Length: 373
Image (cartoon, rainbow, N blue to C red):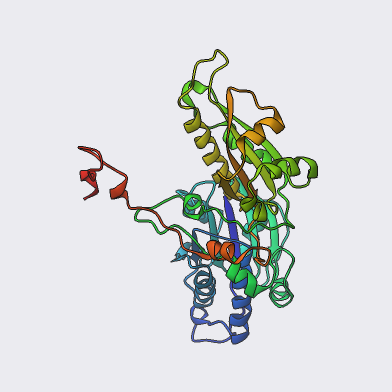
């Protein structure tokens, strides 16, 4: 679980009460900058919990408006916010969830220090990320701490990982699924971009985790009929081999991916008996990889546009195995200048799905399931 601790922005010194202290104009401006950088960094908390005190509430509102996410006012995040409150507020959340807390010092700094063993002092408008590895003990790792001046510098000068703000805003549209029932955050976020960042490799530890997710997929009789040819971009020879198997229309954008794969299905057992469920099982394994990758903000794009027989010849794939799809994994790019106009429009377009009534039946084929009414 990823937790973000944000101290409220600069507030006025005097008011009718401490509860009613508002953000100053400078505080609002700095938070507006910070919110844009936070969005560009790809932070996607499922909810923001904020103290009810006005300066904290106004801080949370600025961030929530930029990220287009829910905001919850909680007395637990008021003065005295502690580890028990963190555990209580996140009790029903999964390890894949991201949560942001907006509150006050000394609580915010003390919480980060207790959870991570660090010694930080958070400035007004500062943001810390803690990745929790032991929920019961509320222990985690301090991944980074961004001071307000750093937010200012990133906003004014840009950073290699962010690109400039105007390009990034256009290139990184918020495209969550519009659903009629609640979904896990990773499922809502999943889509298949073509704009990958050529400057950002996928770390070996993350790649191993993605592959491990496939390893633990379910399969008929536990045959595990999936195999993967994997080529990280930093291995130029192997990357070039997989790249050569892609059809030309996909090569134009897939060359920027961090990893290219060919997914192969064992269609017949070693005894020669056909496995009619092999393709289903391969798809399930890939689905788990895709969601595990997204946990690290790594996106996947699966391609039918490749040459299976060329892959078979190039890698000497046995006859009882069939190359079924190619997959590109990578971090999304903030600069779309390397893409064609059609690809830029594609990544900016909305997501569409047919309604449940057209896919869920009972009684007879194509008869809308009665429980949908």
